[in-house]
Image (cartoon, rainbow, N blue to C red; front, side, top):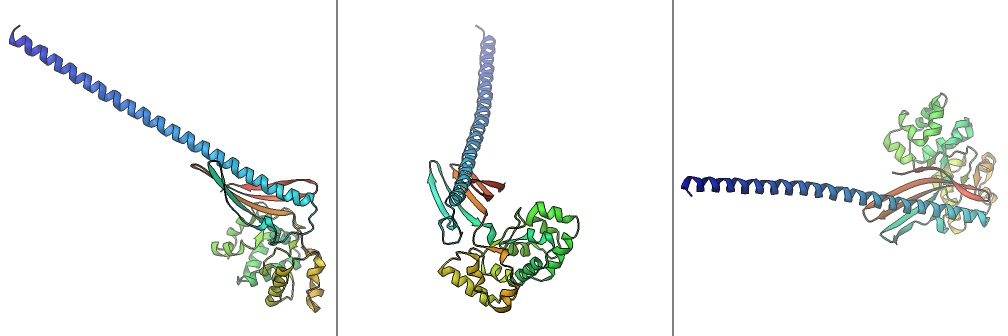
Length: 291
């Protein structure tokens, strides 16, 4: 074979080898890309699975809270107070693959903004006293009263305290401070539970009561929760007792808020729900939010 023919064969072999190497490189890159996408897909599926499982744990926690409320109703518990097990925060409890925690709160320990929708001067006086107890300007009551006098009242009724952001003076700082003491319940006739209300609310709901007297009532309650509303009423004296509406308080609650948090491997889930106690029936979930 001539030198020219031998060189041509070697050139063709070199080109073939180069093409083979290029083909292997392309296949390797494609295979890596496919495996990378498959890995992402598998990871996403796992994360979604974990999130769903965490959500199931959260819903189990909400149902557990409903069972607590139902059992208290079935046993005809006559009062709700902060010394009971339901008021204690549940620390993280290990479960297979994760953990769950939560806490129940008495929503009737707060000022129900629905009381203001009827335009009752007595309720407005209580709200003004609450603002005073919190060191907030009294003009906030006037701004809210003006808003409730128009069509915006229905928006406030359904949006809850979040709608306060549109009112003059209700800055994020004010709403954050006030939000710990107010709520919006679907029942305008709900009553403040004097066994669970903080000192600021005890002061606010009783016209003429001093903050010091409210603190003394709280101290008295810490020693022994009120069995009946007259137990609270008898602590009031003189003009304070005469001005007070005893029908505005209770020692028992029908509305509870529950917060539940859960993790399952890579999944995270939380929920906040408002429960309503019903006579001889499983409690309703009035609303539920999933932050």
